[in-house]
Image (tube, rainbow, N blue to C red; front, top):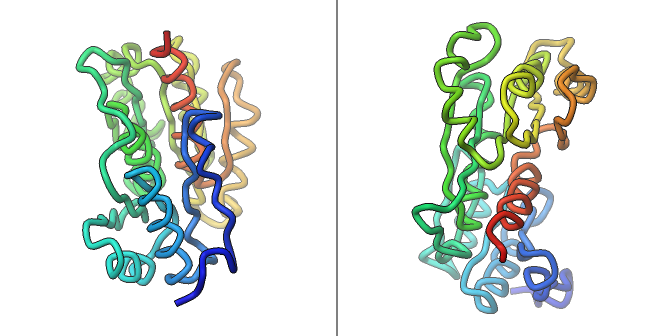
Length: 224
């Protein structure tokens, strides 16, 4: 087995600096590398997360961390308990998904937030093609401390949500769509040019990045 020092220099102090520990981006890493890094993070902190992981990554991780869990839809590996136990009256995040095809990215955001210790309300399949579905769940969005809005195609949903509620909105474009979607570029540009002011946009398919941004907002609200 390889030595950790041969390929990684872990940042064990990151959580103390910015409230979220180092997370493993598994894609482009070998299964062995992911397993070694996750094991080191778990040994130090008692909890660890890997994103963009596949079945081969999980098999290698499970060999050294049998308690690890694989969330196939979101392509996440989690080990250990959440970073914190949320109080029942703690603020929650809403993760809003435009279509069923966007669920992998939405679940990456939702599960990352739950791993970080936050309550999450999921709202699925409320895209603009049937806008009445969104109006029926607006109360859930209005009561949330932050909304992560995930959409592909032309990426219109965050703009609509931004025009309806005052909650901070983090928009996530996905690569879902036909040819002129250009792998999510049309959704990204649509969100960046949204007519509703104050919508924050992360990169294409970056559910974890949206969760990290939402975590900062939630942490600010709950830190005395």
